[in-house]
Image (tube, rainbow, N blue to C red):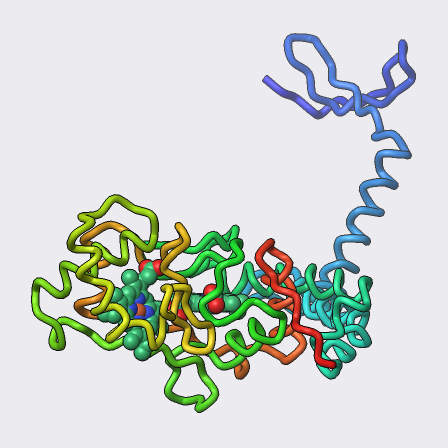
Length: 298
Ligand code: HEC
Ligand code: HEC
């Protein structure tokens, strides 16, 4: 049983006892070390100051705000503002310069490509893929190759990105207009054309049917795809003679394209992105491997 009635000073240590005794064993009341106590008081003081200055006590919908008004969200906004500020001059130049002159300023070009890579990751990769290789089954073109529907110079790419494709709100949008030939041609004609297109693309085909398709192709298709099937970037008509397929080169896929047409759609980015971002992402896409040099203007 504890009995604290007889506190006394211990003879051996010189320290006072607490008066607790268990079976003749007494408890010493050794004081806490000074350094420990002061550290403890200091943390209490620090805790109180912290609660006053910074967000601390959780409430139902948030927390006490603290008199400094600090928040991690505010810090991110400040960081973003600082980055914007640091990039302001270059973004300003990029937005107002002749885009075709960008390659003459390698430093600005490198800056634009870096900025464009993050614009691409945020806005374009959902359709064109993180590595820009496209998704054939969905008709999202590969942007890594040098095969262009609408042209691969910096300015042509920027135009496509700014105005979009088959976007009714913007009169300058790219507008692909391949008719659906299912209502125009009969079965045998479509069959002949499938074989002709596969022959153009260097794929296995029925030679007699492909030959029969030649005249049909000249009459119905060459106005957009060209007499030799090389395509026309003014009309967004793909080159049919390379091994690169937007929708696929199997008989079924070609038949679907000819019968129903495809009407690929891309949203316009001119309203959603700042001009400098449109140009930056165009510089990035142009740098991916397939970028075409602009024709000399003089
Ligand atoms: C909703 C899906 C979608 C998104 C998002 C998208 N695209 Fe596209 N993009 C397409 C489709 C579909 C086409 C092909 C349309 C056609 O058949 O003409 C295309 C075509 C293009 C072309 C033309 C390629 C050529 O061969 O001429 C470029 C360049 C391009 N996109 C860049 C971008 C950039 C840059 C972004 C982001 C700012 C972007 N796209 C976002 C769907 C998308
Ligand atoms: C008015 C212009 C126009 C005419 C005429 C036209 N095309 Fe097209 N064609 C296009 C466009 C634009 C595309 C791109 C697909 C899209 O997004 O609509 C295309 C796409 C294709 C494709 C898909 C290629 C790929 O890479 O997947 C095939 C195949 C094709 N056309 C075959 C034909 C054939 C065969 C004819 C004639 C019977 C024809 N086209 C007539 C404009 C035309």
